[in-house]
Image 1: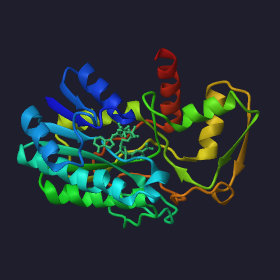
Image 2 (image 1 turned 180 degrees about the vertical axis):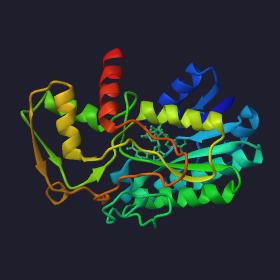
Image 3 (image 1 turned 60 degrees about the vertical axis):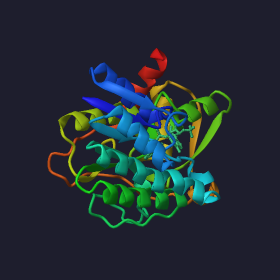
Length: 281
Ligand SMILES: NC(=O)c1ccc[n+]([C@@H]2O[C@H](COP(=O)([O-])OP(=O)(O)OC[C@H]3O[C@@H](n4cnc5c(N)ncnc54)[C@H](OP(=O)(O)O)[C@@H]3O)[C@@H](O)[C@H]2O)c1
């Protein structure tokens, strides 16, 4: 199996490349410096040259707050770029596994979102990711999987647990929002599932793939400190008390309604795996 991974400098892509290489796959991992997905010809050239069987598109404009004041920049990568990668894959006879987000939902449902639920992004980031999903489906109608995931954390990137642990080493009190609920998903677990999908013949269309269980950012922070044995006070606050440029969904738990969909470990297990991997890194 020959895999091409885009956005190779990123948090998820790093784990996907490592998992795939450990499984003995041929891995071509291209960072932004070698493949800028927002350039149509660059995507076409790379996929034509590398002849992968599966392209895993991890490249994205992921700064959710910066996207609010840079909609064109976000759209160039998340919307147009996603379509270019999918079109290039389709032209080369490859399958495209495209990574998307829970932020395509408005967060008002209150029970877990499944694939057929209506979307309604409340941010530029979410809107551009939704446009990317549509571009992928249009460009590779018979050979795409759109994997929506959520609240990623991993050793290879800036992530919530790393930020919390750093802040805990500097302060006695951490204040964390408790009115946004989601599925904190360890990239190591998601990467395993993505590589399994690539190897096993991925399903056509949208697939929700996030850690089992649910919790707020506050719950997550409390658990991080407990699991890492750090003695710091963690206090809940509301999103209104901690305003950010981009609106986040209040509730964006993802579950799959698709028969045979992969199930990821619970986020508590993801956190323990992350902490162990941090020590080993
Ligand atoms: N992080 C989360 O909580 C989360 C949640 C749900 C879904 N997702 C999705 O999961 C995927 C992976 O995210 P991640 O957390 O691994 O993000 P990440 O660490 O920010 O990785 C994204 C990578 O894409 C690269 N990139 C940006 N613009 C590019 C371009 N024009 N061409 C090629 N590469 C480009 C970035 O490079 P630079 O560093 O040089 O910009 C970065 O290496 C994304 O599709 C994201 O939308 C993430």
